[in-house]
Every structure is written in C-alpha cells, then in structure tokens.
Image 1 (tube, protein in one colour):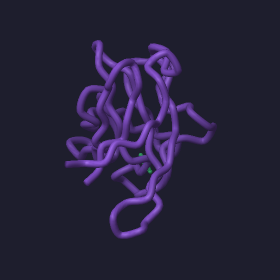
Image 2: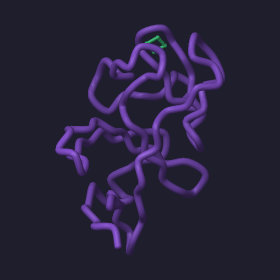
Image 3: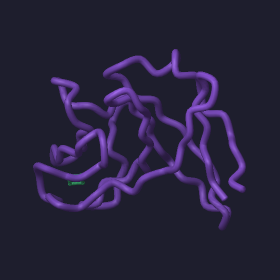
Length: 114
Ligand code: FES
C-alpha cells in the first residue's frame, strides 16, 4: 500500500493556479513537482520539461500560460495539456510531462508513492 504524504488542501489550490512542491523518491532523489487543478480533479507532474529536462517555471508556483489553459515552459514556450501533460505546441510536441501520483482524501491532496 502506498504511503500518503499531505501536500496541501484542495482549498489551497485555486482554479487556474499551480502549487510547486518537492519530494524524495524511493532512490533518495529529490524530485521537483507541480500540482494543478483541472476539470474537477487534481494532477501532478515532475517539474522537468521533456525538451531540455530543465525546470518549467521561472517564478515560484507560476506554470500556466496567460490564458491559464496549459502548463507552459518558460524557456521555449512549449504548451502541455493540464489533464495528461501531453505537449501540444513547441519543440517537444507529443512528448509528455512525467506524472506524479496524487490522491484527494477528505479535501486534502496527498502524494501517493510506494
Ligand atoms: S526547454 Fe522547455 S521548451 Fe525547450
């Protein structure tokens, strides 16, 4: 059964905004990640653009394009769908952000890793 680690509450994650967080994976590697609320649910991805494997954002918690319809890479402007992290515009089209498993339990968002 995966361990649950609380990241924040649903109320902390306003629609159209992201939340940056870190965790350590099973191998001891520090992973940077982001949470985003979309279509009534929450998704999380590693904060690494598949183009150059660099951080997506240049300001804390700022990951979305101005229209707040996609996650955007600040380096070359790649756009990723909120619901599955698929790149639909930019130099890494058809590549995908790496998903991070999260669960919502009683209004709180938890990292769910083995
Ligand atoms: S590094 Fe993200 S689009 Fe190039």
